[in-house]
Picture 1 (cartoon, rainbow, N blue to C red):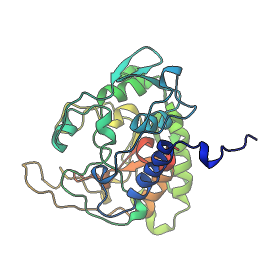
Picture 2: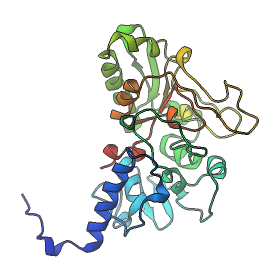
Picture 3: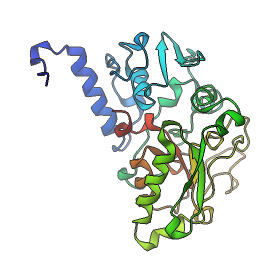
Length: 292
């Protein structure tokens, strides 16, 4: 085993970067923490799972993304380069409002709002707080497939809480999402009986479609999202909040269920100002334990 370098050999920037990583993890459980409240520090070089020599030394959010989707792409300057040669812009250089990030996100924008883990407890998202709802269509198409036919090539049916009569869900096999759903299913079945009604029947998984009211693809289109029982779920559009103004928050899904999904790198739509409490999607870049 290689001995660690003495303290004198550790560069100051490395120490600061490690402190920033710790701060991000704490931020997920701290009240009032946002990306803007975290200090801008020298970036941390990406680890060995960088995806290519040209990614060596990439830092900050780029390093997080590489660790979240190991081997899927590399960085060349401001470009994310996938194995098939497809290139996606990391940062388009434009400052955006929260609303603009939802409609025209680059990949860097996807990491701009920390996702608060369920262990933080019940909370009402602030206006414009939609961690994970900000997505780059180009990035997800490059990750999972640019057409329905391409996505279907990597789908599998996975039993979902079969002991509770949940049937099966069709999800992608990329990044082991199918195996993660199987593990989530086993963990959910171990929950006490009072939680079972929220799970069955599930609302579905793969469905190539746009997000309601937009032309942007839902993560369901890529087989990387799951909806649980809609009977006990709340959705901002169902509540009629489509004409502007404040959106009162509503939720009935227990956080014990959310914790199970987060354990396997799925975020919850109940953490969004534009809430969607039935919805869970695979987003390892937003959960610190999933990209270390």
